[in-house]
Length: 178
Ligand SMILES: CC(C)(COP(=O)(O)OP(=O)(O)OC[C@H]1O[C@@H](n2cnc3c(N)ncnc32)[C@H](O)[C@@H]1OP(=O)(O)O)[C@@H](O)C(=O)NCCC(=O)NCCS
Image (cartoon, rainbow, N blue to C red; front, side, top):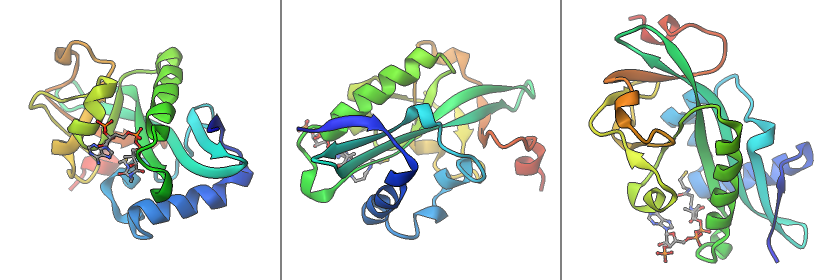
């Protein structure tokens, strides 16, 4: 039986190996990793899926910020991912179990909307939607067209133009300066 638990330091080698297998060892080049640079995943939103003590799934969330380019203000958000399930255990509902559990916990924390980079076809069943044409991107301007959001029932609450930033204490100018 699959059991879900919080990630511990002992899980990290197996988590990193699973992420390398799922996304490749060059995954750090992805734009989404710029949101994670210098920031730890939220421990209370970092989960494993295990069977007989063996890790088959990982899901983590990161605290980040949404910068509104018109008003110059920032607000807290959560960034979901990565989620990965071992190849030999995909399609068995483990991802669904991890996502439902993680999203329930994330919503209960009431930090703000949850963003991710991913396929709308997959994530819309969990309530995610696209940004309705808004120009919101990751720090390097990439992946704006694949950004999805949850927890913003009225998309008008989102800025027309914005930037997702890591919650690392640097101001937005570190990411917007030419
Ligand atoms: C995506 C992933 C997390 C899903 O976990 P899983 O345990 O295999 O998924 P579940 O068994 O809970 O759900 C399977 C369903 O998801 C769908 N699905 C899986 N990957 C999908 C994708 N990339 N796009 C669209 N649908 C997808 C399957 O078609 C299936 O649909 P169905 O329920 O209508 O038959 C897993 O396949 C994985 O680790 N993939 C590689 C890493 C990845 O792409 N992560 C997501 C991006 S952050």
